[in-house]
Structures are given as C-alpha cells and as structure tokens.
Length: 317
Image (cartoon, rainbow, N blue to C red; front, side, top):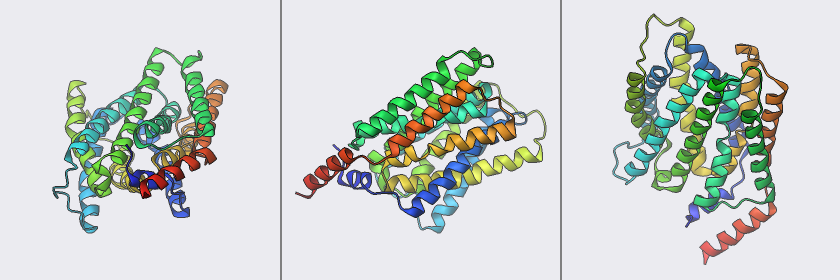
C-alpha cells in the first residue's frame, strides 16, 4: 500500500525551479556518457567507475556536513540503503562495461529507457496511477527500443548489441534504485545520506569488478582524462545525483524520471559533434520514438488525476 507522502508527491506538479534543475541535470547526464568514453583509452571502465565513487564520497560528506546531516543517525534506513547500494554498484558495472561495446549515442538512448521502468514500477509499487496517454507513451518508447535493437544495421554487430543490452540492464537497475529511494524508509533520509549508502556500497563492488576483469592503468592519464574524472566524481555523482534524490523525495518519481526524455537528445547531439558517432536513419527514428514516448508518459492525465484525488480523499478520512 502506498503511503500518504508517496501519493501527495505523485500529485505535485513540477515547479519552475524543479523544471530548470531537471534541464541542467539532463544536460549534464547527456554529456556524461561521452565523458566516460573519452576517458576509456587512459582508464579502464571498472577502475574509472571505482575512482569516480571514491572521489564522490567525500564530496557527499562535505555537502551533507555543511547542511547539518547526521550520516550515522540510527534511523532504520541502512537496510534499504544497502539494497539500493547493491543495485547502484551493479548498475554501473553494466553501464561502464556496456560503453566498451556500444557508441555513446546509442548508450544514452538505452540508458534513458529508465523512465519506462520507473513508470511501470511506480504503478505497481508506489500506487502512482497511469492514464491512457501514459500507457501509450510506454508502448511508443518500447517500440523505439525494439526498433533500435532489433533492426539490422551495417555498423551494429553482436558486440554492440551486447553493449546495448547491458545499458538497458543498467537502466532497469537505475529505475529500481529510484523506486527503493521513493518507496522505503530511505525517503526520510537526507539526499546526501541516501546517495552516500549507494556510493559507499558501490566502491567494493566496482573494485572487485576491476580486479576480476584484470584492469590496470598502464600509463599516466592525459590532463583531459583527469579533468573528466574530476567532473564525474565531484559534479555528476557528488552533486547532480544528490540533487536528483532531493527531487525524488519531493515530486512524482514517474514524472521526474519521464522528464529525462530530453537527456538522450543532448547525448545523441553531443555524441555526433564530439565523438563523431554515425547516426543511421533507423536509429534516428528509434531515438525519436523513445523520446516521444517518454514525453507522452510525462503528460498529465485526467484519469490519473481523478484516481489521485480519490486516493487523497481516502487518506484524509
């Protein structure tokens, strides 16, 4: 059964400030897959992810301490925090390994199928009702993903498809982490603490993965790679992920997650200009379907609003 807090946040429209913040997050995340790809020649994927989490953890502690967060308070959040952390760690094993095989332009589209999974999970777990428009949007997004994966393309081989599937798996785990943060006691924890569980738990997972894959740094990374690692650790994980969890605690998980439909657009355009990725007509059509579907998921639904009002009336009686 969903809590009154979950129902209340499900019905809360995004404020202008929240929309502006989401646009900034989407722009950052759209570039992030490109940053990972650019660093790969100097730092292997699992080591890159491990270093990123290790660099982000003190940033979270500093931000949280300045905001008066008690990281060691006994608030019964450690169990959901550990579960979210396990999923967070495995999520980035899949994403970073997937980026070895698939271009950044494809990765950013498949990663941002996460709203598809969040919308389905929100319906089942959080009681956030979807109307006909939202279900249509999910169907359109699914058709886009199926088109991008299933239609033969000259520059797509078995390795690229494996990378695509790994990215989709990472997207599903990102969605699951969002639902845990929204639907358990973790929603009562400060964003820095909620994310701190995940980043801290991911370090041994990612470190073990780096060891199992036999990764090592064989030469001194270029200044650009070091700068991009700092960007990932301090800004992406330490700051933007914290802002994301703060938004998830306040607004509808499905609406926020669906808002990230803009991110693939930033990522595809950035990959084309920075990485010089080849964009086929088929993949372009698939990307349009995914983005259009997620846009439909984010549209308000009168039936969903009616169901939400009924739920709110029940909780008040």
